[in-house]
Image 1: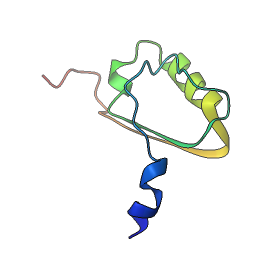
Image 2 (image 1 turned 180 degrees about the vertical axis):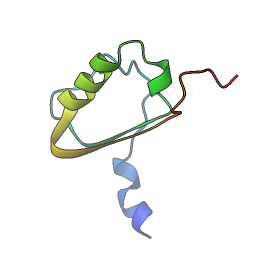
Image 3 (image 1 turned 120 degrees about the vertical axis):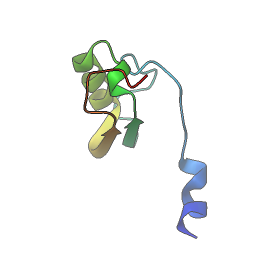
Image 4 (image 1 turned 90 degrees about the vertical axis):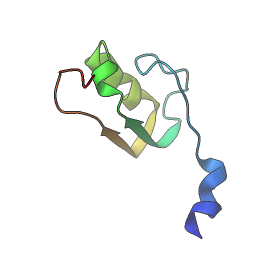
Length: 71
């Protein structure tokens, strides 16, 4: 199965999305799931993700489109 071939290369982190503790151009791809509505400084969030992403890497994010809290 394809997933088992790459599972050791997948990592999750629970860290500040606005101050990433990684080197420049470290990642081939980044996913950021349901984080955007918790970010205080969206521009800083985007710049940090761009900084740690390798050239021609991918960045995928998901989240709500409403600014209102769901709860």
